[in-house]
Length: 317
Image 1: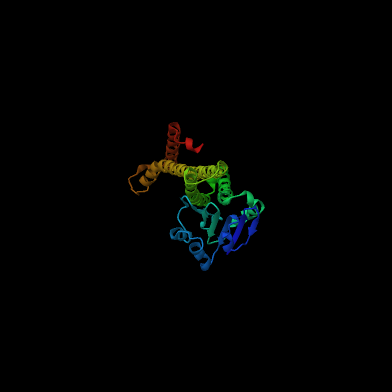
Image 2: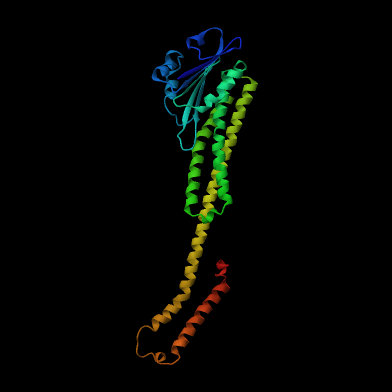
């Protein structure tokens, strides 16, 4: 589906005009949006607009990273769009010239429809760079609620008694950390793209336009910093959980060691008198059983006293 918006030199805004009409001399600038185009509509990129075949190829494939190519005549921008964390990245491609902007996306991008009313209301005051700025700004702002949701959840986990929640909470932390990595893969390259755009000498734009794009760059820097901070927080939560469980395991092993150490001499005594030798005079003594029990009790109490004196029982406080 192709949508067109044009602004003539009198400042009038025209919608759904034919492509041939866009070539008229009275058209100041125009925007053509390819939304889920058909094969015949895709061919217009080469037959009507005469875009380079390599750029058209980029439009038809999902690039691993956002990219920008700048020449004297045209800016070509590929931006990644993330609707939600469960979906894969989608792309929107922009061809921006002095009097036109052509957007191309194989899937529906909701941000396009969000800026259409602004163009229809104030299009005579805008330019192709304004449309590019508004689209990129909407895309970048779309990451904010996703990042905030992850940040809030990590804060909840950190403030809660997550140490007693078992492995389920760690599974969630690992999942959140993976989501942050996914967001970073989309935002960091986009930050580099906008930086290249700002420092390029081939782009002709006013100081006002530069301020708008610099604002986008600042937002990208802030969002990537928030992502890095949350990744560190997720790592801290994981390390704290592992440290807690390690200490807990050590306490359990120390407890078992103390018990085993106490019962070691007692087991020796029990084993000694369980060997069934006939020549053991104390077995015939009337108070032999009580004496051995008393000795065993004194040994246990004595060992506990030694452990306490050495501070080995402090872990039980």
